[in-house]
Length: 163
Image (cartoon, rainbow, N blue to C red):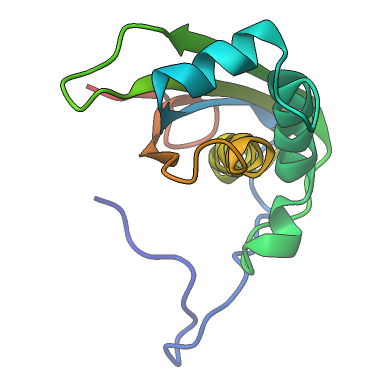
């Protein structure tokens, strides 16, 4: 585990100085799962949610979330993102709790001196919140979680892949 770099010598929070770091291609992939009733997933799939196309809106929201990460997370640097892509995998078979799921995956890229892990994590979180917002009228029990980084590449710390 590396040193915590978001603290200065006085122990106060700081934005890390990345001015001396090399610009390299950075890619991060994150994932979240959204759990819902089978009827809610069926409504999403059939376009029967009153607010509109749930996954289309969640996709745009996830992209916007990635772009707004430094406005939400205090020590994140504003980055020029090269791309943000979201994918949705629908799991129609209910689990043992009777819940279906949508897995949201975000891939974020940039070329710069710092990584895009937080942008990928924010993208899937905002997409999950958007799915909840669009569907809460028919399923107030929607929940989401298992938000995690799947992989990252680029930079001094190299490549990480979740085991």
